[in-house]
Amino acid sequence: MPTRFQCFDDPAIILKQPMCLSNLSKDLAGRLTRPRVRRERRQTPACETLKTLQTLELKVAPHRPCDAESNFQFSGTLVVKWLVSAFERDGGRRGFHSGDFTWTGALGLKVTGRLSGVTNVGTHRKPAFTDCQTCDTRGVMEGKLCGRVLSSRDATLRGAQVIAAYRLRFKPSEEGAQGDVRTTLEGVVIRFCRR
Image (cartoon, rainbow, N blue to C red):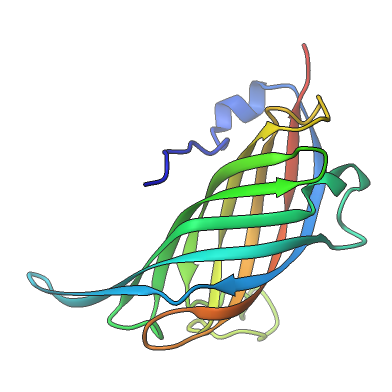
């Protein structure tokens, strides 16, 4: 099973830690494997839950003009070997997901971390946005990705943190997501400064 990961999102540490930020903007495309499915029925409270386990493999490319030139190393491959999802009754309904990833890129870049979020939701809706989604938009995973750079030939990247929002589009089915996916990722790379 994957290892435990702690996201760099503690308010007190963010306030005190000297850091430099750079834009991370990527387009990702790839595949979700056919899910291994488990159905659960409970009586107290009465409910049905669908759980799935699958692998997600994505090719990562820069998205201009928002991707910082300094983050070219992050083009490569992002793999989630254990993507676990839980849905209310079936894969066409609301759910949530989580998985630990390994992201490999240029110049020996290796990032590990966790992505997690909600499934079959539409947050880009009225009243905050134009009506481009409904609250129950199917075939969408939205969430937060947090990672840490384990290795890179660029010394300023070693130990850096990555925090990003992602939106993944998939073809929904009663057994959950599978097949080709497209993803947008928008975030920051956080390099820590010497005091």
